[in-house]
Amino acid sequence: MNIIKLNAIDSTNSYIKNLASKKSLENYTVVLAEHQTLGRGQVGTTWVSDEGKNLTFSMLVGLEDLRIENQFYLSMAVSLGILKALNSDVKIPLMVKWPNDILSDKDKVAGILIENILAGSYIKQSVVGIGLNVNQTVFPTHIGPATSLKNLTGKNYDRDKLLTMIINSIQYFVKFVERYKFEELKMLYLESLYKFKKPMMYEDKEGVVFLGKIIDVDENGMLVIELENETTRKFGLKEIKFASR
Image 1 (tube, rainbow, N blue to C red):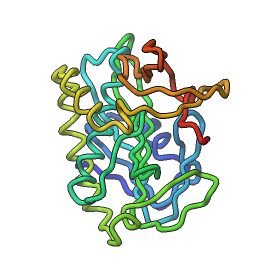
Image 2: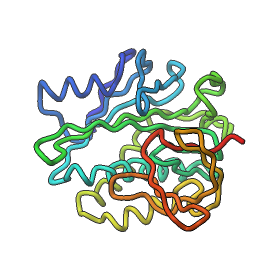
Image 3: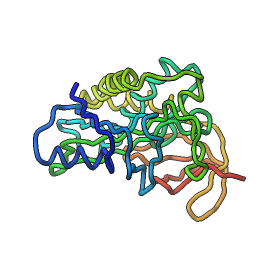
Image 4: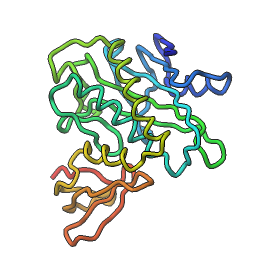
């Protein structure tokens, strides 16, 4: 397992993408930083983490014959890999919040940012950025509801051991993608999805609040919501959220 450890870097995703553009890297090479100055989340958001307390790392995943239109299956595999590794130790139920955050109740424990390197209509490599709250106990309010493994269990964690567990678990689920076991992977993902098939109040990007339930995630990673009148709507990232009222 090739793990590159850095004290501080702007972004582990940017670092490993730059490195991969200059030389061939072993599959599942990991760049781990004690501190990121420009850690990134989904759609331009930032990832805030106390230095030396959490896991902030990026992993290079080499893929063969994964078409661009099937890229969300990799997202499923990564989120399930993290979930399986954490659930083996954390007895408080953790779930996947669409598309790939890891939650305890309403509090975020981990976030994922995947950036793909393309070759024609195929994904040549994926850079999987992961931020996991491990031993940090206090979080700034501006980042939204967040918690950590230590807050959930009261234990301090060996981050190196935890990193190895997560990498191995992600590799296990990536094999589903490599073997085209898409339906099996999707079934496991939906079973782990936060509020799946439970009626909830949602708010769309226009501010309209409505009752609906998650019934599917389509092949493009769009969230499929069934409305009260039994029609469905599809939503992309940042187009829907749980209503606060």
